[in-house]
Length: 288
Image 1 (cartoon, one colour):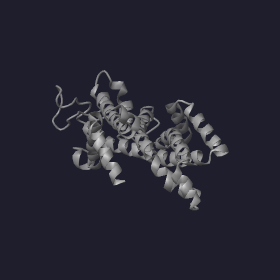
Image 2 (image 1 turned 60 degrees about the vertical axis):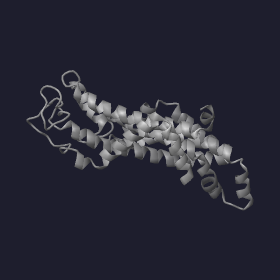
Image 3 (image 1 turned 90 degrees about the horizontal axis):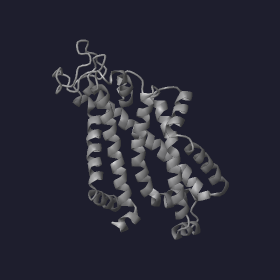
């Protein structure tokens, strides 16, 4: 495992885009972890004498509010910093839920095949046949608005991607010689699936997890924008966009700054995902 990660790091170093993504992600994680120390103000604190102030580098800005304030006088920089906590936690939660659920179902479907495989894959096809954000909206409408229910909805939408990837890998791996050897030694089905086969299917899972991270952040932000995700006064980027949309002409910084945060974070994870795919796909290595 140590050799695997050292080789992966060496391959990633060759990809400039992936390394840029890694640097941005590390900075984002640092900001999220130390938000109380970095943020100049409490994100929910209201300054009645500082309504819709522009950033400090724009005429009319004030020194104590670097990125300005929103329509009720809250510091935007502080809200963006605390918003990184929510967005990264959301992405991590979505990936963990989808990864565990999708891996389990995908391994079962690929290993047993037959009726079990047909049932799991037909449900997977049904979910994938619906627009992801629309299906997530339906789930949140049933469960009720809120960040927890938004995470559940986005995780359900993300599960089919993991199922299809791991199923395809298991169907190939279960015909390898080491699997037949494990059966001859009397290994149980559980051991063969999760101890013998699963570790050899990790490469595509790592790539999908990195891409699923960005999808989770983006979809939960979309639900927040629609009023179905994080609720006020929580400083989530999608919710901040929704609150500021009526001020897009008079106070454009209120919309632009959260949008840039979403863009940079999602782009960073996509760059990392592309780099991981290039590093872990042997066919792409041969082309290079």
